[in-house]
Image 1 (tube, rainbow, N blue to C red):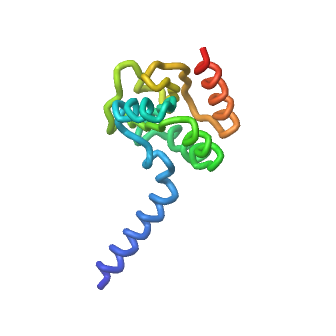
Image 2: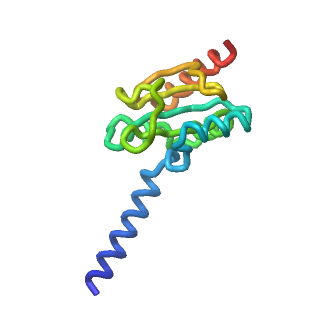
Image 3: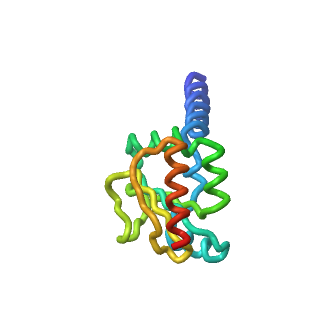
Length: 138
């Protein structure tokens, strides 16, 4: 009986934690080639977020910025979203794996249009999006 209660409590806690800390990146693509295919099909650019599973700064970026509806609405509208963890996913050689979180804005063919790194609050991230948009036109 005690074992059942402990298991139910553990499952509930895991579910709660995953709903709070899962953020949007668990719904993103994790395969670079599939993202390129989808971007070409939908005629969208790509936002590539590279992080690490145990990265404090990546977690902070997810909590502070990617958890905001305004940020995610803008990203979903204009970009194909891909999250690659250097601990779990294949990262093509043209992208940096270290110094995460890293932000890459790519055209639909995978050409890097703009890149940055670090933790950004929502206002700073919108500025980054504006910079990326300027480079898309060039």
